[in-house]
Image 1 (cartoon, one colour):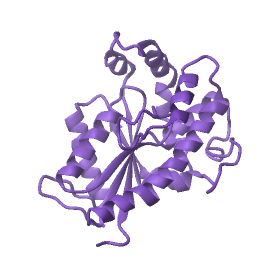
Image 2 (tube, rainbow, N blue to C red):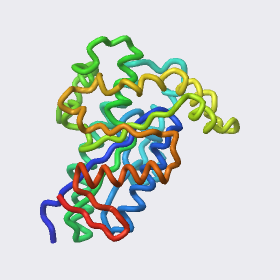
Image 3 (cartoon, one colour):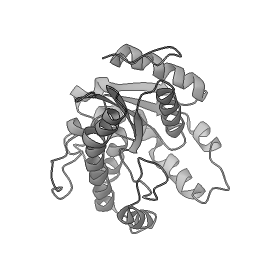
Length: 245
């Protein structure tokens, strides 16, 4: 049984309704078809804490904080607190939970799929008027318990940053969605910030970012994802492919 499995981490980021969740699902399905253990976790923002997926276990803390985040009282300090908590959780998923799962299944490779990462982290700081975002991504919050958080510790091996024109994102909204107004306001306020989010990430990490056009069909985007995973990380997920390091 493998004792030291290799864990790849792959992030998807971009504005609301750009298709991050779809790409996470497509990648996990392809990994499953190849027998490769994987988990989808939240890297920035918040998670529901409802236990509906493996990467979102039940948490009373997350349920309470989510109710607070959807009120006008939510402030930068609160969003910083959620970012730190997600960062600590990501480390546990990547360094403990997923390797354990990989070993249990007798495999040598696992993939952590991260929904939102450092580009999303820059949003709160920019909204708060922080000027030196690159050097303050994880330094504006009270010291966290345990391991100190920094962007190098939590940055995925590759981040697919999707962007799309405003009209495309708005057309994808469902007016019947209870969060329609919230999602629309979020798109209007932050969409353009993702177009240049890369410059706010430490220079040595920027080559991990791959830009994709989120206005394309999801299957077309996923084909580009597969090409880049093979070229950059040696992960071959073609229909009869395999994973190499």
